[in-house]
Amino acid sequence: MDTIVLKFGGSSVADNDKLRIVANKIITLVDEGYNVIAVVSAQGRKTDSLLNEAYELSDNPNARELDVLLSTGEQISIAKLSILLNSLGYKSTALTGWQAGIYTDCNNQNAIIEHIDTSRINKELNRNNVVIVAGFQGVNELEDITTLGRGGSDTTAVSIAAALNAYSCYIYSDVEGVFTADPRKVSSAKKIDKLSYDEMIDIANEGAKVLHNRCVEIGNKFNIPIVAKSTFNEDKGTIIKRCIEEQKITSLVKNDELVEVYIPNDKFEYIELNKYLLNNRINPLEISKADDNIYALFKLNDFRKLDAIVDGKIAQSILNKNQISRISIIGHEIANNNTIMNQIYEIISKEAEHISRLEIYNSKIRITFKRIVDNELFKDLHDKLINYVET
Image (cartoon, rainbow, N blue to C red; front, top):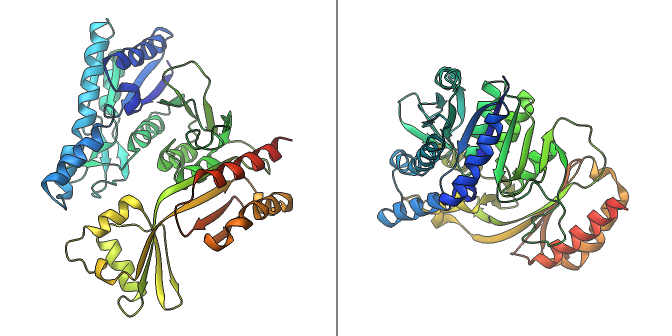
């Protein structure tokens, strides 16, 4: 009997009516003869609510205790879904991360799955139970609860699929798949039917919130097809798998949740700063020497964590900081296509004075702006480049 892993995001389980939709999708697959494991996120914006409550109590909550708190959101979801399935006549067992055998390193709020002991999951499947697993969480060698970072339920699902050599892994959310751009920013964005793992990793790494980047890396490593689709319709979604890539633009991503920082060299040595960040478990997206300053780029959430370090050593040394935008244009070998590159240069030339960096790779082009830019430029790039590709 084939095993299928399903993951349902917070919007898919936000209330009891939506839980019934999720239950019906599970029931359909059980009736078709599949073993089903459902990985579930916290309901709605429960994780954000728990974080806000924690920061009302402390400017710098203890990392271990914060994970104890954050893990409760998923536990509510798995219990409710399992109660519902059992009431409908389908045997179900809800498992927390540690009950499901998910073992991680000790990095609170951004833990890495080290291995999965599948014995409990297999035991429940052999009893013909639907297994409902709390996403986003595991347990470390100290038997402390850990969480995997935002979007970590995706990684839970694909990791379980890999550990069980599952037939496939479906990632359900409130969107129909992966688009050529965020449809909330670009109304003309189009759904992509299929992507390679490498393309999807680039899209995720540049800030698109469709899939957790680590889940795609695991899918690639173990060759687990991942299907991103909507909970609320029967669209086929987007399949991410190994495939031959064409020389074309796949997607554009605009990330406005970045902070650019400059620190004088006389305040921090480059190696010293790197060690300081490492010891405080803060990972800059980029860090380099720039003339007499150190340049660093952080995700907004990581910068807030940096800003909250109690000794204020870095905060007092910052020469300049700006919240900025970065547009990434993604596609296999696009930097080697002169027509595509000329199109990009023509469109961004009007913004030249606001661009701080232009980075060119084989698989993507990144344009970093000195400020937050509106969506008009992004839409212009998308519509001209995507339409060029399709003609």
